[in-house]
Image 1 (cartoon, rainbow, N blue to C red):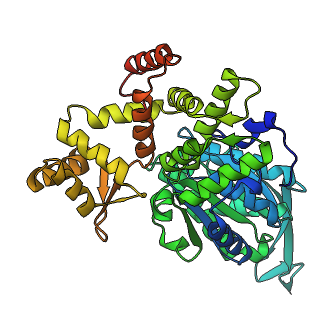
Image 2 (cartoon, rainbow, N blue to C red):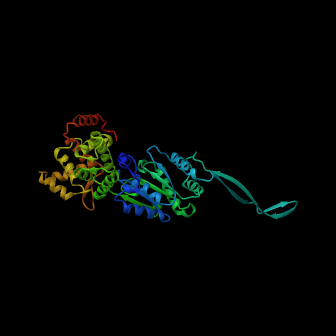
Image 3 (spheres, rainbow, N blue to C red):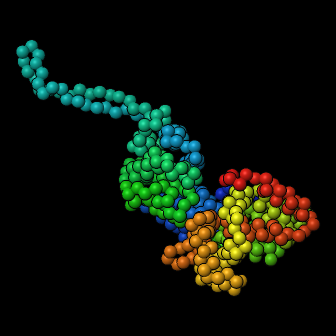
Length: 425
């Protein structure tokens, strides 16, 4: 480990709300890191990092860029971002590294072919006009070329990260087109801007689904997709934290965390953080996370982090019958991280659900509720929102907690959910 940490530093390692701070705690992303490094080291390529929410996209970029020559500039996008404000933020960031905020060009123009003076004719000469071009962000008329010229003025390699890019509405074509043009311009003229790069990060199944389809950048954009982690990577992460912080998870607790995370590090971090909080609340000197700590941690994590999933779950499952709910439950426990349609069908047949009813449920959840997705190629089934699976499983764990120490708290959590606006996202 690069840092010497004490147990009291556990909130620095379990970080559901921030990128992991050290490569010592990044597991299962070796190939993605290689792909990102190769993309950034090869001229004309611009990385588009995509994947589901909670898989560690920002962490991957943040922990990789220090090994790349260049100065990182990060812009966190949001739904209110306009093209004008985007340009202003970007140029303000770039201006920290520019030598000057304007530059001077000299233009020459030729006089009329012949001029007459005192009866004699002379060949025309040239006159020079000098003008100073100021780059400001006061106008929404600035083009990708204008921004490119400002990047040039920095006289150094800039690594411009556009994080949370998925928050920009799809219909905000002005920004998307502007970013696409900037990607193309910096890629085509990489030798003139110190090989600066645009790095886009956001939730999406593909680069095209994130930034749109622009043929002009097809040869420049390099998609780096992050899927769910393998269970072994989650287990390795937990083992690393035990070693560096000098504590341990009870084996059954560790196994449940690994299995119930479904490969999403966000949930691993959230539940572990809350479980350690619960352990210290039980006993400040304790250094072993037991099942009761874990169960209390799940309750607290659900209360803090899963409100959005609760609202989605309510909306998805409203008015579903017993067999439809059974379908959802079986899907959760069959996913690795997808479930075979045939396997799921067999499990439900064994529980008395006919093939006709199975297919009816499949169509309803896929087309009407838009809760699940069925792969055309492999006939696999998964949730449209992949974080729904760990939420449902955690929610079932919460519902089965019988500890008298948590009954009142469990009730308060349920009441707080019941009072939520179901349309809140």
